[in-house]
Length: 187
Ligand code: AMP
Image (tube, rainbow, N blue to C red; front, side, top):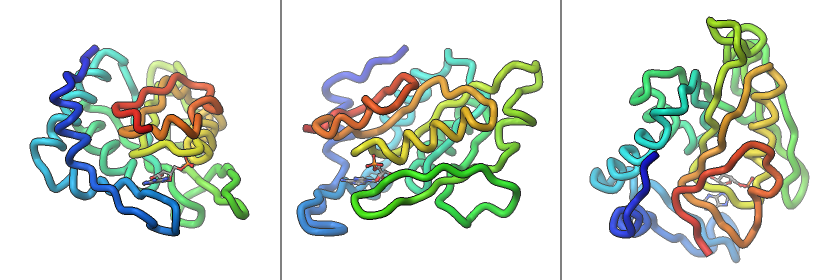
């Protein structure tokens, strides 16, 4: 398992831009586009994630719409495993399984294809497919909790949920059953 040095953490952290009051007043939006455009920072992150998850014997990586797609797909290719998009409602063309979650006002819904992790969520050996769920950031944890429960619903096994950033003061990870790993914890 790999551990990031303080210097490596700072390379990643310093490459992420804070945008105050986006998308609404009071929110500090963590803009990862500046990290993606910084090859040293993006590579430091991807090397770390690759080293961490090499030994997990994953079958799939599931990425949450939309920034989780970027990290998830890059990592899946590095590890030689499949990539599955967890999408916002109404975007996937085949039969889906959906899960609702609460927002500050109202609710949202995420979906996956019913056979995304193999028929009944089983891999070629007949065991439950081992899935890593990934997103850029955990705030309240509602999105990730719904996405993780979708993985279980279709019969696969969510072995860990990984975030690039965790807003620790919101305690979002407490609602997630699977182990949670956050590269950077932000106060
Ligand atoms: P939550 O369900 O509250 O944990 O929200 C997580 C989702 O909202 C993730 O997909 C994030 O990309 C996005 N998100 C929430 N808060 C922020 C923030 N401060 N900066 C960037 N993205 C955020």
